[in-house]
Length: 153
View 1 (cartoon, rainbow, N blue to C red):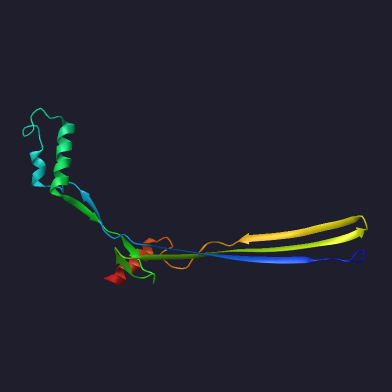
View 2: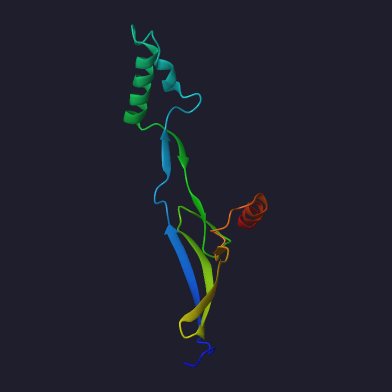
């Protein structure tokens, strides 16, 4: 190559990352305990258990709740469907998102003298913000929850 003649090298890159998560709770969470006003709660006292400490009475109460299957509350998950509109009780949820990373690299070399070559390069990389592709990925607001609740009724 003759002196002073450039040998350019240009490269570009684009990377797209797609993420998705499908999740579902199959059963509700059951909390065992006494509901307010449960008549069985009154039998756990020092009269019925003489000499028992308050820890012993609490342990007896907890054992009774487990053995009797006393359910104080049930907690269900309501997940936003893939359409972003309907809530599904114990249903599947699909969350999708995307992120882009773009880059450019240019390099050139110049032979200034037979024993001196100058190399230079420039790189630019940018990672764009995460993009939610489904509303299940976005954070709910009181406005969207109220609107969806109104449509469901």
